[in-house]
Image 1 (spheres, helix red, strand yellow):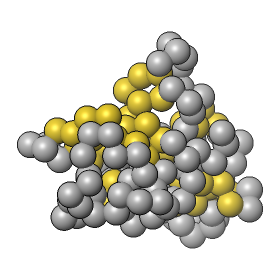
Image 2 (image 1 turned 90 degrees about the vertical axis):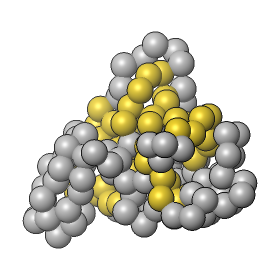
Image 3 (image 1 turned 90 degrees about the horizontal axis):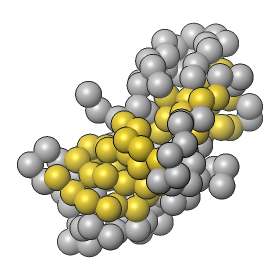
Image 4 (image 1 turned 135 degrees about the horizontal axis):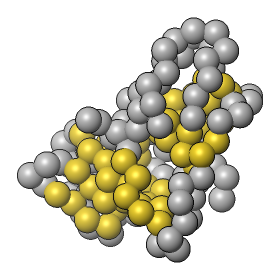
Length: 138
């Protein structure tokens, strides 16, 4: 399943879940998708956007659709797939990797200006263990 998967928090904290904001009207979302809060509504994050959190379940397009988001916090680790032709600097320790346009993966070709830092890569599964450095609510 694509998307960001919460692994653990350095400080032993349980994930912070946010339920009081809805998805933007007529926008669908997928579990594990990176989102940001814009105008009081969650919307897909991509590219070099600051990440607010990650959807916990799929959300159908419609009007006033409720959703639950795990807040991107200090100390949280995630496993996430990566796509694209990897830049030579897409290695362990890369600290400014961008999101893919889907918001469900990293863009391995863009390693400058992004929100995510990479601890480790699993090249056989095309996944990375990451932290969100540029958090919308940090």
